Image (tube, rainbow, N blue to C red; front, side, top):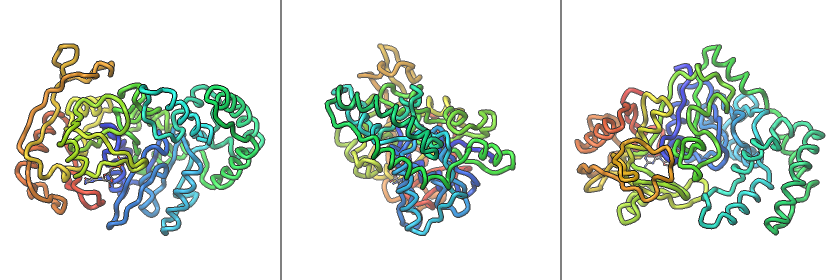
Length: 427
Ligand code: GDP
């Protein structure tokens, strides 16, 4: 498989970190192409847990190249802290194994401040961001006032660009929000120092990855967040600020669309969502609580409890179709053990019409009626099983039923957080 796009099909937290870490064993290069440190990817290898926010999930495989491409919004402090943390644990991170695009946009303190201040002003319309400055950094990118990694390496250019950006941001912070402005000299000094530390990793990652592809290297594109949080195709405005699926790769990594050879989605056996916004199959009561407890559904980045609900076949079908996926991985099947019955959202009633299509205008989902079908559950811990035929009959029936509802093959099942806890169905 020369190049493979792996992306989340729901609202993020689908267990991408674990699956990408596993698939990275067969990859030469792992590329992050969008999002920022709001995504937390968790990997468990031999019981040891690693949570990464910016460094791609191939880093635990010695010799694999990990690329933070131009489409990622990089918080340099966070990125370097992750590098330090990995090195302290004996993971090799060098200018060969970690590559950072000179074209990636940067997140500064003023972005974090603006993120928090604007959320506060939105009141009930707040988006529920992680407050890490990612939205404001992408806004600056689109407004053409952002700074990119390459700018940090040139102190004069950095001073000119940062002074201009900060003058305007400080005026807003002070006069609109009534908060304390930032000190330009201190910000500059810190930016240049961060640039010096980043320098060994920085390059033209687009050109490097294209050359790797031409040389026959296996490239894995690591999506962050999920399709339902895509800025164009998700539940706008309750979305993240980038294109979260395969469509984000060409722009976000400088990689030709026609060279993306395969796309595979990742979805949980149920649904979760962090933050505000439409979530048709949400379970507000006891069953939702039970899923949260069984799946330990609390955010890897913020610790926030995740909203939980039944698997939504309408949303997953939409996400897979949008990205041209020919297979998907169902994660967290183990979490559903012990429920008497399991339901799946199979259709919505939108504006009085029954539909199995995801609506183009997400506000249509507000208060929409969801149609469910239900099947019996199963008992017992399935996390130690490795063969499909060993799963309880009702677990297999659930998997095959959901696969049929979604209409795309399930190529792997994940039945626990550890790298080894999978059942292959072709992948
Ligand atoms: P990501 O953002 O998609 O990488 O997902 P997160 O790392 O935020 O959340 C996934 C959580 O579920 C992490 O704590 C993982 O260790 C864990 N996890 C991943 N796959 C499975 C699985 O199949 N079963 C269970 N029980 N936990 C899993």
